[in-house]
Length: 244
Image 1 (cartoon, rainbow, N blue to C red):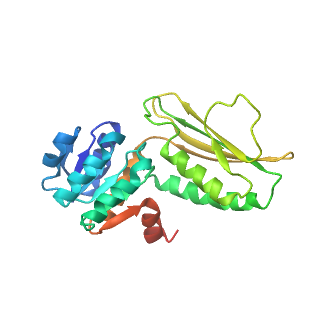
Image 2 (image 1 turned 60 degrees about the vertical axis):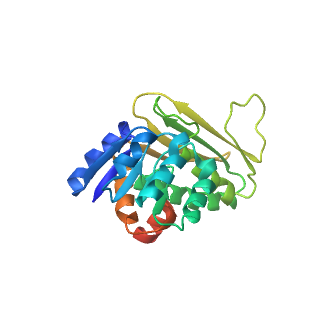
Image 3 (image 1 turned 120 degrees about the vertical axis):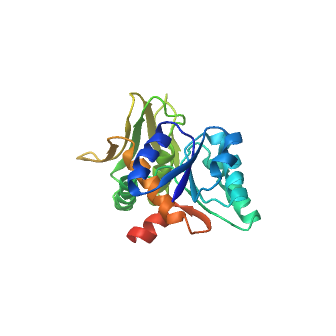
């Protein structure tokens, strides 16, 4: 299929390298909103890894062009309802799939964390905390993946009520989960969740070796989305493909 790449930075270039051996073509590239309309011509699907402030504009362009959109940009999560509203207003003429992280391994990791959190909910001697590390070029902090993990923990552990992401200059409350973010290095992607009791500690970690897993997941999501219409997440993909 013909793929339009919106945002031709590190992820866009990696997606191109992953997509070509799978028999796909890159039919257009765009780095700014004015370039998007031209890049979408002849495309079967678009993949966007650009900037948060441009996402809604890109959604509008894809709706106008009738091109399904895989959205990999993070930092715009608070405007998802607006994106969904644009699709609904237009009669959902295209498929739109967004995820804070397209790595298949990460989505396995999220399922593992959810299961562990449900167990920890029944063992109140275990406290829980989280940390992540990303490369120095990461724009948002905490990452979209960290936000997804935080939601899983709060939804699953009833004694935990709030997340604290900032530096703590006080005692952390028992009802809080502290989730810290570190930025350093050129290609760092990692998340660790700790379940800590007076007698032992359980650490659950996912570390990416490079961007390839994220790019492959985005391309697979685009293959899945091509003939669909409506608003989707990577959970929909995982449920359909893996029954997870």
